[in-house]
Length: 190
Ligand code: SAH
Ligand code: MG
Image 1 (cartoon, protein in one colour):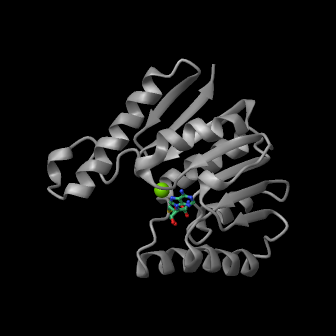
Image 2 (cartoon, helix red, strand yellow; image 1 turned 90 degrees about the horizontal axis):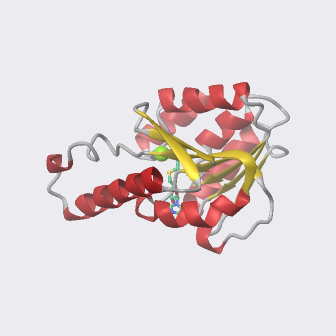
């Protein structure tokens, strides 16, 4: 059951997507007949499993560089009998190369690298596809950067702000921002 994955994530501090953000993406998948998904950042497979459970025709390719999380994801995908629908790769996303074009790309890995992920993986998007990015609010710190004094966190928050500016100024994509979960955006090719 997915509830068990949620419990595990809380116990071991795995940053899985928040419920309302997840439901928002699931609705998008249903309403737009999404069939193929590329996910950057699998963690323990929670979001990939939830996407695959929408219906049997959905194929998810997901990338995780951390070996422990990858192993946990493999186990979870097996427990849900989703090996046919979810392909997972234990590799750094920047070393991953794929010619496939996807309906949906979900960027949910290292927050400081979002512009680079976007630039790399936009080439894997179908013409009418979308890129969804997670954690653009980063616990509200993007809106209120003064709420942290931690140097690393400050840097990360500043990188996310730059990514938001990058999306707003982007000439190839139109982006809509949603204050859902930890902040989500949908970018569509113009
Ligand atoms: N999508 C998951 C949560 C992912 S958490 C869910 O909602 O259930 C982000 C994950 O991205 C972490 O497990 C981290 O190890 C991984 N990650 C970060 N940078 C990465 C990179 N460059 N390549 C592959 N995985 C990366
Ligand atoms: Mg996330």
